[in-house]
Length: 187
Ligand code: 5GP
Image (cartoon, rainbow, N blue to C red; front, side):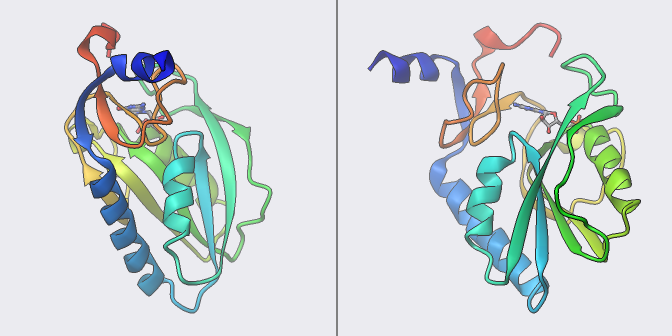
């Protein structure tokens, strides 16, 4: 199967394997279920990277919940998030008065998330929190309150479990560092 070999050629060190991902998602699901017990939660996923985490996390939640998605694009160059983002796809569901949990794949500088939070807060949800699978604390440029964090990782470009490099590698079942041969020189 050349496809599998091709995919794995881009993979460097595995940072979080499938077992660890699964265990942490179960823990986060239990924590969120306890915190939101008796409430009707709206999960807001940020396309595309968060889809995988969101699908697994949602199946661990024990209260009623809905999902919706937003797609955003940064105006900055690819490797340097400017924090000015454009909404490519907005929510279908009205968030006013709702308990909203934004589900993100990774928080890097925090600029994208910070913009998103400001935009959602203006729509007057009853509550607004963030769950991020990964965070790179070293890279943070703006303080964003992330209530649920899966893993803190070092400042390295990662792929897998939803995270891409040039739209590839999202289907890896683990989180790995992009192979050094493929890391863009500006990253
Ligand atoms: P921020 O605005 O926090 O700097 O950027 C967050 C976005 O940058 C994430 O939602 C993700 O799309 C992208 N990003 C940041 N770090 C990585 C990484 O290590 N790997 C991948 N694939 N995307 C990343």
